Image 1 (cartoon, rainbow, N blue to C red):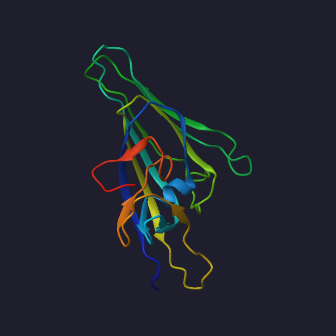
Image 2: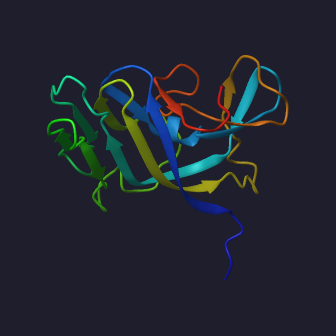
Length: 184
């Protein structure tokens, strides 16, 4: 048997342009990590469903030796898993930067396949210039039966047919900027 729906696992890297304070990342934001421009003002998500594999964060070294803390918190869901899970680390001096490597529990909401929605996948905390890697497993929109049309996003200045990457914490105005790729 072969699945006709393309699927992939990929790690996306982002840098915080400002401090992250309980910055929410929605499942919808994860679906818009890769988008294609249909017009100069409209792009469409390529991902139909997403599953979080791992999140890693690194805090920048502090020149003043003040501790730097980064954290990732997976949202609990009262119907499946009630507990929130927090991963956190604090730097030690200027040589040991804060580093978090977080995986959602297998039976948690964050560890399961999710369609794009306004539900929160996780929250991030960290200083300006912290690095966030998000590894997700995705399925590309198949729409064989016409029941899963891709979501449209209003943008400014897109080039028709161009592939763009989205900001982790919001398609166009988020603080987490994709590193080394073209984004809107």
